[in-house]
Image (tube, rainbow, N blue to C red; front, top):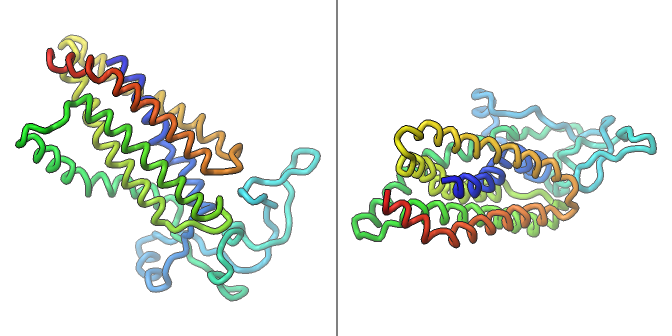
Length: 271
């Protein structure tokens, strides 16, 4: 259990980037313009972000990666320009001068993972039930390993998004983020419930509550590590390298899990 606690720290460190680095990607690098036909409905449901106006204003001066440019004293400099959303927007998508663009709120992207959890959980349960009837269902430890591998694939979706948009020169379609969230949700469903199942199966009865706390502790450490990773977002000029780092961490966790799989499966069988 302690082995898996250590491994899942890496998973949570990458998974929780949905609230930090991926939200930054949604805010600055993703096309969030809402179709005009949907604006009245979205507005009635309070799902519209404030509009951005295609006109000059005093704004912070940003480099090509939306980092604030500072003067010799370390203070952010300002300039007269369009709002930052227009920085990497394709010219043909600009509204007429003085007109508005209504945007999908950045925070709304946080709803994609819970949406996929609701949609995909029954499908994952049916899939494993199908395998169980044919005596092909993977062990709990094997499911956790596959969860790590699938989660790693979600970071490759973002690598592709960065390359497709020439490292943020143009805005990415929201479908890239939706696809990445969809893949990592499948990984989460293979890993998170299985980890809790592992704790309940392998813990001595009098230590079960303590071991549940150990799982929660591993999750909290993963959250902290996620913040450490996200803090370095601006240090990567090529954003693909940030996602390659995430992939490398999950691949390392997967390889370590596979190395320990035989011993873990034996422990599960004995339990």
